[in-house]
Length: 240
Image: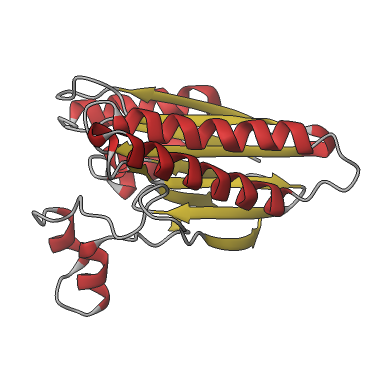
C-alpha cells in the first residue's frame, strides 16, 4: 500500500478550510479521509480540523485493542465530532452553522469501507477505468436524480456548491457507508470539490495511471490550479 496526500489553498481563497488525514495502522489497515469545511471566516477550518482529528485519533487509539472494529471506531468518532462541532457552533455566533463534508476510506486487506457525507468524493481507478463510488449530497445531484438537470448542466449550475448533508450542522448526521473489494493495482482517490469541479475525469485517469504514486496528489492539484480552481483543493491517493 502506498499513500500520498496534499492540500492547496487554491487561486482565490484567503484561507484553506480543507483538511486531510491518512496513514497506516497495525495489521495492514490503511486509511485516508478528506474534509471540506464551511461556515464563516474561521468556522470551516475549525469544523474540518475537528472532524479529521477525531477520526485520526480514534483510529490510532482503538487500533491497539484486540477487538478493534474500524467501522465502529470511525462512525463513533464522526458522531463525537458532530456533537463537538455543533456545540461549538451554538456557543459562538460567528461559528453558527459551521460544518464539514467527509469522504474517506479504511482499507483492511482486500476490503475497503467508504464513508461519505456532502460533496467530497471517493473514486476508484481499475484497469484504466474511473468509477465514482460516492454520490454527492447536494442540491444539483437531487436535480440530476429527478431528471431536471443533466450531469453536464450540473457542473456549471449556480447552486452546485449547495450541499444537503454535512457533519456538525445538526445534532445528528447520517453517514453513507459502502463496502467494496479492492485488488492489486487499484488506486483510490479521496478528493474535495475544489479538485473534482476543476479536473475532468479523463485528466484524473491520466494522472492516476502514472507510475509515481507519491506525485499524484501534486499533479492533480496542479491541474486544478491550471484550470483556475477558485476553491481549496485536497487529494488523498491510496494505491493498492
